[in-house]
Length: 477
Image (cartoon, rainbow, N blue to C red; front, side):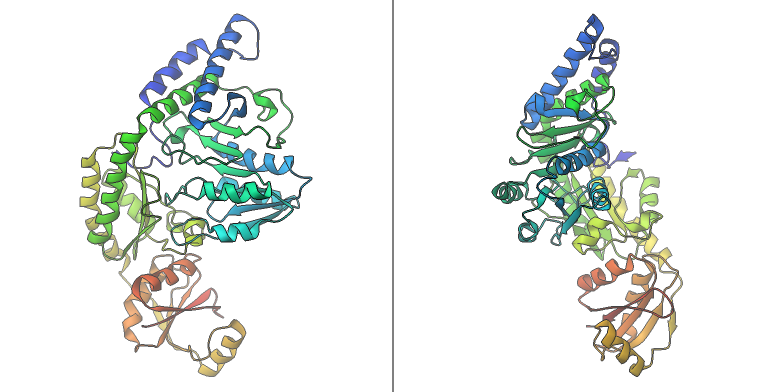
């Protein structure tokens, strides 16, 4: 099996594995105790904290360990907001933050706070003008990730930090995907990271709060970990995490260049050998090991299953690979295709031969799946009465002359069927005529406009359909 999901978890570093086993013997005791075993555990914990602080360019007393990267990211935002509650209850987050940060923002909103979610461009990069416009006198915190976890785009952390510093606003950075791989730009106030992303064990998160940043833990009081994270720390796992981070930090430059060349090969080869495929994310300002692409007319879950059978472990942000009806919030914010979405993230040491094998089998797998999913067809229904459509169009802000010449009923059918049927029947109408696709799949709201961008047709808009769902209108160009 070729493991291509390092963005979820990098395989445990060999040295980290040995360090964990050793620390199980030496660091099992309570590091808060003064007897011999406790002092020895404390020494191991302090050494690990210093290693992590050195790699992150922080002071050891600014670093605390949490139970996960998710917990670190959520504590980072909520603790900063709590520490600045006298300033206000407004926060700014980017629309492509990790779900852990967005869920923390939702909790803040539920408690009476206010959140502004800033837009990104088609590569997933935060719009700095929109970010600056969102800042207010009562803004207590801003959250911008260092690199996007789904498409790999590096975010303008340094520029965002300058904007925040000019207003005296702390910047909270979720750096889970970048720590150990690329340096995080200076200027942040609070940083969160996750050990299993850099080859450490799962269950260890890192929270760094710069001196001078007002921070109040949203958790119950506890004297451990600078009173920010309650509970008994897992010293062996923390030691293992620090060893893994140190190992990656000392060897990452050459390996990152090698992985980046492999990713470049994937970015170039996939759209050339697999028709109707969109590679997303910034092609240059990106993580070295991650690439994401989406294949039209392919069910995402079927694609991941087929790749698994072929010996490749990959992941996806597509709504079609889950039981939910909502597309990936990252792909939705970017306005790109969500169907047939594949995220390839290469762990350190990935052989080039495995990437070549992946590129060799992918076209055939996609072709076979397209042949299966295109079987059958949507029901075509009579076009609606022009006068009725004109009246509805006025209410829905859809031009009155966009009366559908053809209506495709895909209600009850999930992606990629709505787009498959649109592609199949768009040639059945004259040029400049409109096709309406009826769908109750939330992903169609994203995929139909994305299909239009890829094919050069015009997306006219959407309106509720009396039969249920939405009617997505496309003009043949």
